[in-house]
Image (cartoon, rainbow, N blue to C red; front, side, top):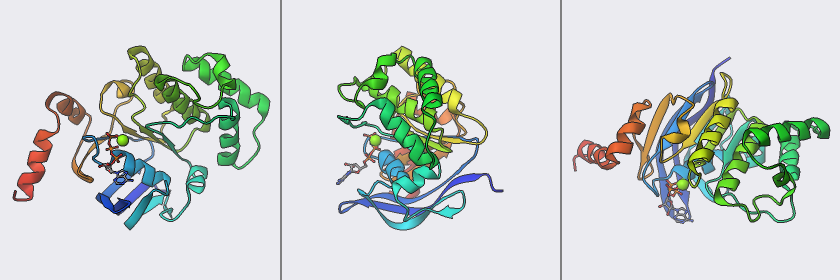
Length: 254
Ligand SMILES: Nc1ncnc2c1ncn2[C@@H]1O[C@H](COP(=O)(O)OP(=O)(O)OP(=O)(O)O)[C@@H](O)[C@H]1O
Ligand SMILES: [Mg+2]
């Protein structure tokens, strides 16, 4: 069996009238960690939202395959069942549904079978403890009145419980204090194994402290402008994106 989890071919995406993603090609294999970086507004969230099938983003052309299956026209819940997960850059507050209830319902929907409440609650408590979340948060409404950092930890909690094949984390580190970044980064390490894969969007290197990125992709103006290994993150951290833009401009003859 092929090791390829996700394959994106010549993807073009628009939001409203705006053409955002341009000719994206990306292959993610089992066991790999991919990091996507890029200036604000370059299309990073658009990319993961499109992979998750957020209806706001319209595919103009191109294909998305997951484990060899064409999922380009598949709805988000079907993609989730196949093992795709994303954590949101700005998680929404949901009044009336507790964290516990939400994650249990998601787990049973994704696994397509009822979950044992006892086993689920044990797993939830264990993973909340690992993420240093207070037990009472399980009974609180999802993200309702949560601080920015608490919302991000709740996203990682969902990832840990749902245990997807491909986890895409959209700036899960932004807004976290130094200790929380470490705890979340540990959670990511605990999730990662040879059978699953990570796509991490970040502006900083701390989040990947515990996982070694195999590939770094840099989006500029909706296109992949540069690709490399983990050393690219350090170069960007020190030098910014100007040199990548310069490279793109000179290869375009500008
Ligand atoms: N509904 C919309 N109508 C028009 N443009 C939009 C819409 N939604 C997003 N965009 C634009 O798409 C571009 C890409 O946005 P996206 O959220 O993917 O960027 P990003 O790389 O995730 O940025 P950040 O680092 O700030 O999170 C931005 O210029 C944004 O303004
Ligand atoms: Mg974004």
